Length: 163
Image (cartoon, rainbow, N blue to C red; front, side, top):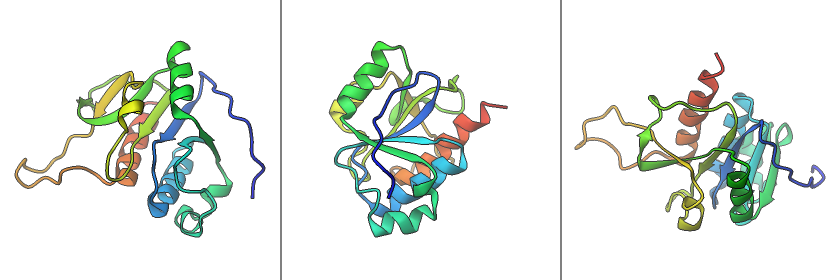
């Protein structure tokens, strides 16, 4: 187990932020996705599943030991980010098309709970609302993406902007 580190917000970094993600399989998969796309720090709400849950470790496939996970009070952390002018992104059904938006190389990407999405108290602190459009016909499209699937799409889009 890693020693707990104090979280210090860095305005030059890109973070993933997990809001009440409680499913260990999703949490571990998101760790692996972050690691793949070079996001080294994850901010997690205090009610997220424990990093050392055996299912998290299994799903992360080693990534749990290669990146940093900081459990914080999201309201305080995201409020501080806003005061420092750090963009806070979130995915919503009423957001702007992620493929058409200008995305920064720094900021915080908030991903929500499996059943409820981004919680209302966190949503108030989002400065840039994004939407992942579906390629399916409206009558055949699923209601939403799984949080780890959405994480993959969003991380890929931010990563692509580096080139």
